[in-house]
Length: 439
Figure 1 (tube, rainbow, N blue to C red):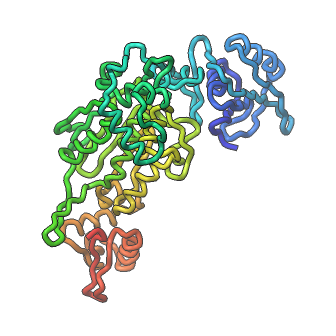
Figure 2 (figure 1 turned 45 degrees about the vertical axis):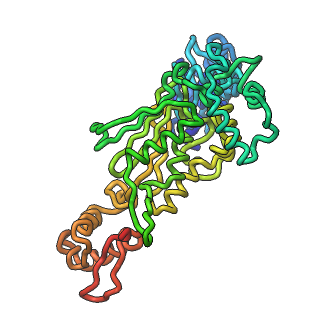
Figure 3 (figure 1 turned 135 degrees about the vertical axis):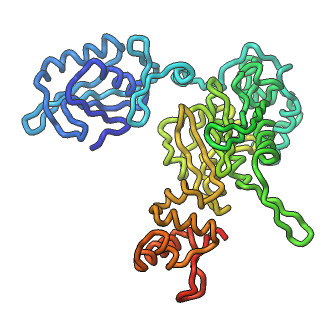
């Protein structure tokens, strides 16, 4: 069995591996095998008797926890199995905290450590009281807007006639009359006064380094998601204009549903102790990045299929659900993928990067980046560029530009048709040609 989230192989014991034990204890638990190579094959231990005494004592002395240390034998070779169970309280190793994520061990520091300690105490960041805030800091207009949305969705019954204080108590946004952080993020007049990184920065880029212009938007979530969407549509992307009779039809470059979901995902699930949300608009794509990785055990792959909802900010997510902004079924990323698919755009890319989640929507399926993902070879890529410039290509032209046989050209052109990159003209024989399927 290969190494995975809860299995680690080590050929010999080193004190460094106490970090792995700590990481397992703080995560979902796991097993370390001492005396096995990276493939899980037994290589054996010479000093297994001494290690059977030293390892459990060392773990108990430096971390204050108990693990199972078992001696195993295979083909006359001994190896040790260290079984670490998950702990409900945070476990430190000489004042440092480690966490097992995927198949790697991470040291928790800064915002990640604060979030981890809160979670172990049964709290999330948004569920903590904000002692600096009063109800004078709440935007009543945003509250009224939320109530209209919630009643339209039917997700918040019996709220008519409630004061803001009573409503917030019902939404669990207060504790003993004091506002929680979630209340300010959702409904604050000036949430940036309390949390400076709450703003969303939008930049128009020619490439990764060439910034053309930028804007910064700051508000509570109830207003911010719509403000950001409008700003992008009005200033950062181009609308395709068509006419049906006398009617002017404007079609955005990216599906509105995909944009809305990407913005809301970034706002609802971000780490508000970290960096601001960043949206980058390029000629051929738009990216949304928010600090805060996926909540265990979610993976990037699980976001592409129906999955459980595991919000980082439980209160913020719950209020946004009641207001009809999101659902509680983990379908946000699926909606993004489906919206792009229905619009004839490439599948969005979702990856973890720089301590956060990056969602990329692509405008054009005919870029080199997208064509490489389809598995096109260099000759096929050259042929597509040829078609972009001249509008079409024949089998003879394909042979000429790549110096290949008619048989190879036919095979590779057929492959381009199967992959829906090119279409074939209805004309047969010498007059047949191929053109872009997007035309």
